[in-house]
Length: 213
Image: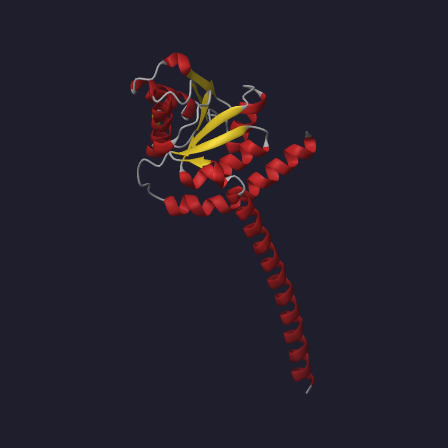
């Protein structure tokens, strides 16, 4: 009899612990999804299509992305640069700020972007380089506080653009975004899934930056 009662007690304790962890996990999930939705939707109206983009901005901000080899941009990065070039050729921007990671000698996203743009016929004089844009937050923050920009066109793919718009606009930039999806990309589902946690992180970075301001 005592063994049965002891088993019931242990089962009850387990159920209580399980319920607490389950409840905590559910609360975290709701918060994460709420923050993600906020980041993804707050500035979604500022997404523009390349073919119908009519506004004139001084600077296009191109975010860095992966390289397939030393100095060779991947397809995602190529499309970002090509989109910026098209905006310049159509007279929608007068300069292009290329911002990316340059932490190691073998991974220089900014130089790779510049070389590719020049190869595509872009004049070197209209290219601005930010070698310290280690992530989206840093690229936006430096565009505002180092390069003293007020209005920018953000150039990146759809899966990344709304987060970039959220960060830049929350940091005080008047930013509009143009999607650079010129191809179908491998691992796009993986990138989209990663945006959930990246959006939560972006929200946190913005909150902290405002507190410290």
